[in-house]
Length: 154
Image 1 (cartoon, rainbow, N blue to C red):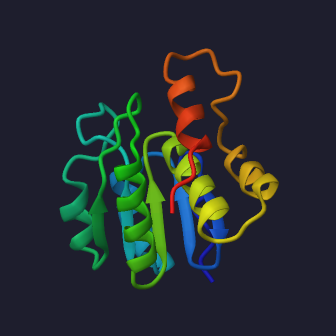
Image 2 (spheres, rainbow, N blue to C red):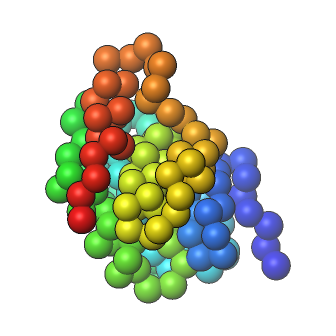
């Protein structure tokens, strides 16, 4: 079995078929393919200076499906969450979800786990907080993210 590439920024394995991370680099595309990742979902903006240029095409060249849901860090919406949920639930095979720091991703999984997968709130929060928590963060976006994760939608 190939070991997880824990040197990828903020790498996290959620279960046997779901991994998350911060940004990925060129060298990581082949590594994800070798792990058996079949689908990558990217929540980062392609205009971010650390975004992987041409990510979708690079992944496709390795046989990995790609979904891009650009979520502005200062303006996550319930529509972004709905697109994320649909992408995760319809992904065929192992899925890797990333953004730049794994903050968007961990917040989105928090809501998915809490509201749709029946995970206890405390467990879902602890999983999110392995990467970050907007509570007590001194950033302008912290209140936006605290409001975002507090909302519950079907």
